[in-house]
Length: 189
Ligand code: GRF
Image 1 (spheres, rainbow, N blue to C red):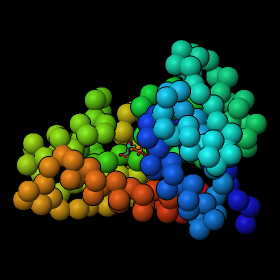
Image 2 (image 1 turned 90 degrees about the horizontal axis):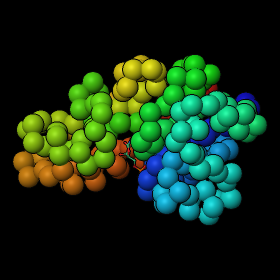
Image 3 (image 1 turned 30 degrees about the vertical axis):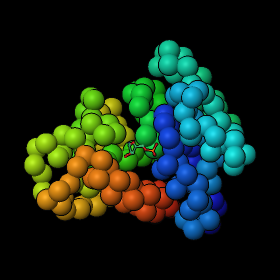
Image 4 (image 1 turned 120 degrees about the horizontal axis):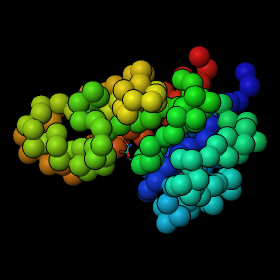
């Protein structure tokens, strides 16, 4: 079967991007492009280390024009994976990749979603609400923030002594295990 090309969109340290790259041959996809919203993001080093084409976005250009579609087309991208991408995905991009954009969220959607709910803020909210469980959600992206079809969820129990940081650490391990696997399974459907 033809290896499908994916583009990773990321804004920060890029640990999920790394996990996705490391599992390319296991799940038969190819990271053909890495797109970053922040020129200082560590994920940029990952692109350079692995000799992958990358693009640094300009916010206004990204939201107001569809120039990026040419780049995605040029790299024959089949699927977009948002791995810690902090900007809103503009409607033209969602319409051009219907059911072809996947996001990972470090909580059990629909809980703890929406504006401001990213990174450690999510885990602080979960712990301060005295939840007994949390987890990860891998879902399709549509025009409603964090509301696309859920592809996969994994749940963990919170410990008595759980802190936002300990929860973040445990959840990250789950993300690295499941995101590449779900991408690999979804891309063949
Ligand atoms: C992850 O927790 C992911 O769930 C969220 O952003 C974080 C990105 O972390 N969407 P990293 O940059 O992949 O290390």
